Image (cartoon, rainbow, N blue to C red; front, side, top):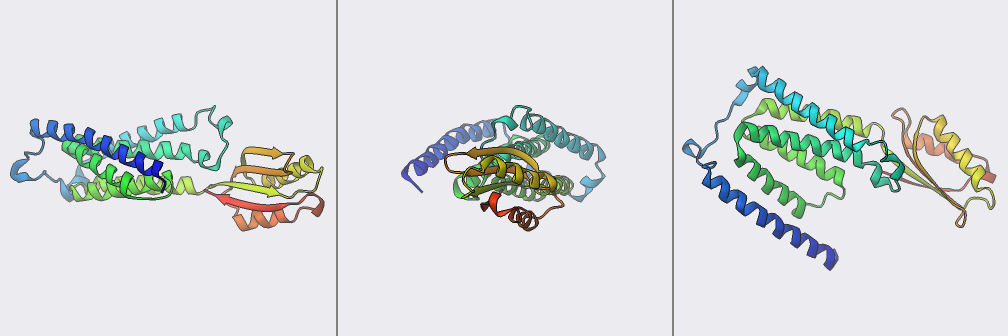
Length: 255
């Protein structure tokens, strides 16, 4: 880790602390930590009979996911995609909107004290956990929130959260984004090679997101979504069967 990155982490940690301290003080002033016996009232397994709470919670989660999708899949977003990581951002928007809704429902049920707890957990995950990607960080937060909700005595909402997270992950991972770089193409055959590779992708029902050509380096690059019925190995074999006069060296990257 470079000095600049560690410095930024320290800055954000201090900022989080500065924001958290007034929140704790405000919560104490409002009596939010003064539950009877120092404990929060837990609903327990009886919560599964509270159909009103369950229906309202499901509605809130569905609304948050829908609104996140509206922003994430904005019509102009696709035209600005240049890197593989950018293709994953709509999913990240939806997942974080879902996370915010889970926090909102929990805070509504138990009060602002839970918001303070969640804020502290979020800071711990952000500054002490290296997940490697925004997507994995989102899933880690979901798992943490699910455990927190279960521990707070809301098993029914923990189950609802888990079901929603499972369905979202299944939907998102069924068609992963991929990037294929083709180098060392035959000289002067760049456009013909591009047409040939593109035809193979369409034949395998892949959804093309972006395409880049470099006439100087004789290189092609395709960003696309792999169809759920097609495996990477199967598509790679099909791309490798193109005629020698149109074929290059293939390098894969999958989200």
